[in-house]
Image 1 (cartoon, rainbow, N blue to C red):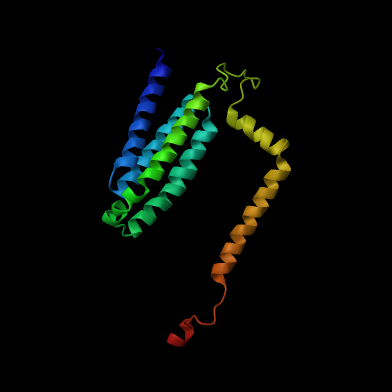
Image 2: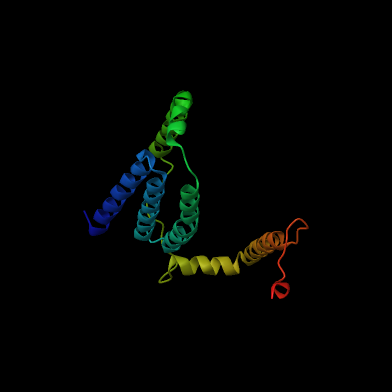
Length: 179
Protein backbone atom coordinates (compact mmCIF):
# COMPACT_ATOMS: atom_id res chain seq x y z
CA UNK A 1 0.00 0.00 0.00
CA UNK A 2 1.41 3.37 -1.00
CA UNK A 3 1.23 6.50 1.11
CA UNK A 4 -1.33 8.03 -1.26
CA UNK A 5 -3.62 5.02 -0.85
CA UNK A 6 -3.22 5.19 2.93
CA UNK A 7 -4.18 8.88 2.97
CA UNK A 8 -7.11 8.13 0.64
CA UNK A 9 -8.44 5.47 3.02
CA UNK A 10 -8.05 7.79 6.01
CA UNK A 11 -9.96 10.61 4.29
CA UNK A 12 -12.60 8.18 3.01
CA UNK A 13 -13.12 6.77 6.51
CA UNK A 14 -13.45 10.28 7.96
CA UNK A 15 -15.90 11.21 5.21
CA UNK A 16 -18.04 8.10 5.80
CA UNK A 17 -18.03 8.73 9.55
CA UNK A 18 -19.04 12.39 9.08
CA UNK A 19 -21.78 11.48 6.60
CA UNK A 20 -23.18 8.84 8.94
CA UNK A 21 -23.09 11.25 11.88
CA UNK A 22 -24.73 13.95 9.76
CA UNK A 23 -27.70 11.67 9.20
CA UNK A 24 -27.95 10.25 12.72
CA UNK A 25 -27.26 13.29 14.92
CA UNK A 26 -30.29 14.92 16.53
CA UNK A 27 -29.12 18.52 16.62
CA UNK A 28 -29.49 20.23 13.20
CA UNK A 29 -26.54 22.54 13.86
CA UNK A 30 -24.30 19.55 14.55
CA UNK A 31 -25.65 17.90 11.38
CA UNK A 32 -24.67 20.96 9.34
CA UNK A 33 -21.19 20.95 10.90
CA UNK A 34 -20.77 17.26 10.07
CA UNK A 35 -21.80 18.14 6.50
CA UNK A 36 -19.01 20.75 6.47
CA UNK A 37 -16.56 18.04 7.56
CA UNK A 38 -17.88 15.78 4.79
CA UNK A 39 -17.32 18.55 2.23
CA UNK A 40 -13.76 19.17 3.45
CA UNK A 41 -12.82 15.50 3.31
CA UNK A 42 -14.34 15.10 -0.16
CA UNK A 43 -12.32 18.14 -1.25
CA UNK A 44 -9.22 16.44 0.14
CA UNK A 45 -10.08 13.32 -1.86
CA UNK A 46 -10.40 15.43 -5.00
CA UNK A 47 -7.01 16.93 -4.27
CA UNK A 48 -5.60 13.40 -4.07
CA UNK A 49 -7.13 12.68 -7.49
CA UNK A 50 -5.43 15.83 -8.83
CA UNK A 51 -8.70 17.70 -9.40
CA UNK A 52 -7.62 20.91 -7.68
CA UNK A 53 -10.22 23.14 -9.29
CA UNK A 54 -13.11 20.96 -8.14
CA UNK A 55 -11.70 20.80 -4.62
CA UNK A 56 -11.31 24.57 -4.36
CA UNK A 57 -14.74 25.16 -5.90
CA UNK A 58 -16.31 22.75 -3.40
CA UNK A 59 -14.71 24.50 -0.45
CA UNK A 60 -15.49 28.01 -1.68
CA UNK A 61 -19.03 27.45 -2.93
CA UNK A 62 -20.46 24.81 -0.63
CA UNK A 63 -18.56 25.34 2.59
CA UNK A 64 -18.06 29.06 2.20
CA UNK A 65 -21.48 30.10 0.99
CA UNK A 66 -24.12 27.40 1.10
CA UNK A 67 -23.23 26.00 4.52
CA UNK A 68 -23.12 29.48 6.04
CA UNK A 69 -26.64 29.99 4.71
CA UNK A 70 -27.73 26.58 6.05
CA UNK A 71 -26.31 27.33 9.48
CA UNK A 72 -27.95 30.75 9.51
CA UNK A 73 -31.37 29.29 8.61
CA UNK A 74 -31.05 26.39 11.06
CA UNK A 75 -30.10 28.73 13.89
CA UNK A 76 -32.90 31.16 13.05
CA UNK A 77 -35.62 28.50 12.88
CA UNK A 78 -37.03 26.91 15.99
CA UNK A 79 -37.21 23.31 14.83
CA UNK A 80 -39.42 21.07 16.94
CA UNK A 81 -37.77 17.65 16.73
CA UNK A 82 -40.60 15.83 18.53
CA UNK A 83 -43.09 17.01 15.93
CA UNK A 84 -40.80 15.88 13.10
CA UNK A 85 -40.33 12.45 14.67
CA UNK A 86 -44.09 11.92 15.00
CA UNK A 87 -44.56 11.84 11.20
CA UNK A 88 -41.56 9.56 10.67
CA UNK A 89 -43.45 6.26 10.91
CA UNK A 90 -46.03 7.46 8.39
CA UNK A 91 -43.43 7.74 5.61
CA UNK A 92 -41.20 4.82 6.67
CA UNK A 93 -42.57 2.22 4.15
CA UNK A 94 -42.17 4.61 1.22
CA UNK A 95 -38.68 5.52 2.40
CA UNK A 96 -37.68 1.86 2.62
CA UNK A 97 -38.95 1.22 -0.93
CA UNK A 98 -37.02 4.21 -2.28
CA UNK A 99 -33.88 3.10 -0.40
CA UNK A 100 -34.19 -0.44 -1.81
CA UNK A 101 -34.58 0.89 -5.36
CA UNK A 102 -31.51 3.10 -4.90
CA UNK A 103 -29.43 0.20 -3.55
CA UNK A 104 -30.46 -1.96 -6.53
CA UNK A 105 -29.60 0.83 -9.00
CA UNK A 106 -26.22 1.48 -7.39
CA UNK A 107 -25.44 -2.25 -7.40
CA UNK A 108 -26.25 -2.45 -11.11
CA UNK A 109 -24.15 0.61 -11.91
CA UNK A 110 -21.13 -0.24 -9.78
CA UNK A 111 -21.27 -3.94 -10.61
CA UNK A 112 -21.36 -3.40 -14.35
CA UNK A 113 -18.35 -2.89 -16.56
CA UNK A 114 -19.23 0.70 -17.43
CA UNK A 115 -16.24 2.13 -15.60
CA UNK A 116 -12.93 2.25 -17.39
CA UNK A 117 -10.31 1.08 -14.92
CA UNK A 118 -7.35 2.58 -16.79
CA UNK A 119 -6.17 6.08 -16.05
CA UNK A 120 -6.59 8.47 -19.00
CA UNK A 121 -3.41 9.62 -20.63
CA UNK A 122 -2.35 13.12 -19.79
CA UNK A 123 -1.88 14.99 -23.06
CA UNK A 124 -1.47 18.27 -21.21
CA UNK A 125 2.17 17.89 -20.24
CA UNK A 126 3.20 20.05 -17.30
CA UNK A 127 -0.05 22.03 -17.23
CA UNK A 128 -2.36 21.75 -14.23
CA UNK A 129 -5.97 20.81 -14.77
CA UNK A 130 -7.09 24.26 -13.60
CA UNK A 131 -4.98 25.90 -16.30
CA UNK A 132 -6.27 23.44 -18.91
CA UNK A 133 -9.85 24.17 -17.84
CA UNK A 134 -9.18 27.90 -18.12
CA UNK A 135 -7.71 27.51 -21.59
CA UNK A 136 -10.72 25.55 -22.83
CA UNK A 137 -13.18 27.87 -21.11
CA UNK A 138 -11.67 31.06 -22.55
CA UNK A 139 -10.97 29.75 -26.06
CA UNK A 140 -13.48 27.12 -27.10
CA UNK A 141 -16.39 28.15 -24.85
CA UNK A 142 -15.81 31.90 -24.57
CA UNK A 143 -19.24 32.92 -25.91
CA UNK A 144 -21.33 30.65 -23.64
CA UNK A 145 -19.14 31.76 -20.73
CA UNK A 146 -19.71 35.43 -21.50
CA UNK A 147 -23.46 34.88 -21.99
CA UNK A 148 -23.66 33.16 -18.60
CA UNK A 149 -21.76 36.07 -17.04
CA UNK A 150 -24.16 38.63 -18.57
CA UNK A 151 -27.20 36.63 -17.41
CA UNK A 152 -25.80 36.52 -13.86
CA UNK A 153 -25.08 40.25 -13.99
CA UNK A 154 -28.66 40.97 -15.11
CA UNK A 155 -29.99 38.79 -12.28
CA UNK A 156 -27.87 40.65 -9.72
CA UNK A 157 -28.98 44.05 -11.03
CA UNK A 158 -32.63 42.94 -11.04
CA UNK A 159 -32.41 41.69 -7.45
CA UNK A 160 -30.82 44.94 -6.29
CA UNK A 161 -33.33 47.09 -8.17
CA UNK A 162 -36.24 45.13 -6.68
CA UNK A 163 -34.98 45.76 -3.16
CA UNK A 164 -34.23 49.45 -3.71
CA UNK A 165 -37.49 50.52 -5.33
CA UNK A 166 -39.62 53.11 -3.57
CA UNK A 167 -42.78 51.83 -1.98
CA UNK A 168 -45.55 54.30 -1.18
CA UNK A 169 -46.51 52.55 2.07
CA UNK A 170 -43.03 52.94 3.58
CA UNK A 171 -42.21 55.98 5.71
CA UNK A 172 -38.89 57.71 5.19
CA UNK A 173 -36.99 59.96 7.55
CA UNK A 174 -35.69 63.35 6.58
CA UNK A 175 -32.52 63.95 8.62
CA UNK A 176 -32.51 67.67 7.75
CA UNK A 177 -35.96 68.11 9.33
CA UNK A 178 -34.81 66.49 12.58
CA UNK A 179 -32.17 69.09 13.39
